[in-house]
Image (cartoon, rainbow, N blue to C red; front, side, top):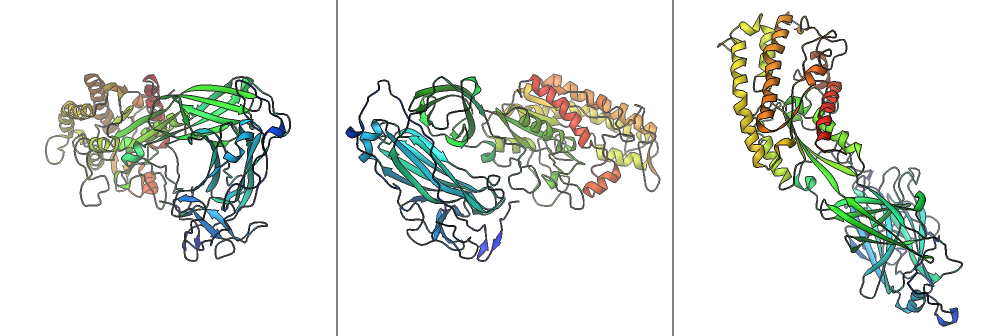
Length: 638
């Protein structure tokens, strides 16, 4: 569910806000192999004044409400607009603000305005290394929202090749103290020799709401003669990198972890990394420098994200890239390089209620909420928790987690065949989890498939209900037929064939068998001392799941089921995740410290009985730790 911003007359959107003007300077420059000296008399002075047209948004009308009025003099994308101060939902003009300001506009997450200006008339001074460029603006946003604006100036040669760039902004909500205002930002740099034009781009980014409240005003680009002694400095640059978190976010602030549910989300066209620049000895980078970047030997535009931090959002693929940077000051040039390995682990979570997190809604209470109500699927499951742990463990890698496990699923109904879900809404059934995985992932390589399956092939929920209703349930006719114990043995004997069907489907997806991690089941039948519960369960009406029946549930159902899981792993080359039953041995249903969801807890937490006898959040954490150990051995984590 998406946040809707704030309401205002004329539509639901965020009101615009204004910007003030900034002036500040950070000296930077260039050095060449041979130093040419020119006297001031021999070099013409740079052109004076703001080189930009309509940098203050005053040329032309300003929008009111949700209207879009592209500002004259700028080439715009998205809904970039000039807005008018003082109208409904807009702030009054600050000192020097005039009548209008720039904003990102309605219904657009990203809007830009671009203007390219010629500096050829100042070529002599520029080529002599005696010209400084200053980029200035007021930048801001609305209250606690993190919509923001940046302004970038890129120095271009006669062929429009990039020679370097500088950027001001963004101003975050934290910078603004949560207030609707704009703050001054500026930067100065020595203009690189051979510069003949400068491209200025205003970028407004929306993070919250519907309206893009990235504000800017009084944008200026000025040239001046470089004065004073140049800063000194030399030596190699030290680079390090991080990649942004993908799994575990809640970008729309609906209280649920954002899941990947479309092929475009699973396999984006572009990837991002952030590089930090430092000098020898770990010293901070030279903020007065102009930085020119290359990726695999080709020029690239990195966006400054803060002091010494630069981001590139257009890597076309997950691969190892060679990053190069040259920092230019009047004292000379320093360089640095980095081997940047873009790595995103693609992990899938398949299976039954154990894999889906049954019994543990994402939000418990009067109105429980799930990632998927039809499947009682939750980010509290051990599959999701293991993926989240890998995401948080290393800032140089990210995780794409595709969670498809569905409560009540068996191999034929759910894994390899259609299934209606534990909460059937009617209409068409769900396609099989393997088919869903194939559709979402496409040709992308899967790093790990987490699987929990088998217990519903034995009829888990029917067995529990039968034993609550029936004294000595293992020896009584089940569903009017054979004794329950015989029925369970027959179903156990059918499991190898079902696992064979699953293996065949996974193999057709090109998944390496060793990257299938199948998990054994936990033991819910014992108390704090490790002895069988006496009784395992008792409910209103005198229904009892007795101690002898609990012992049979372990020895006749759980233990042989786990043996079949282990046998399937050996047969098909899967990686076995074992140890859950042992870890739960003193934390069963009747334990003083249970890792199991009780009937009352299920009724309170999710308003139905389906969570009963499943692992609780603590139990899922323990299973996740077992899975993580196997994933790390396989190299799926650093």
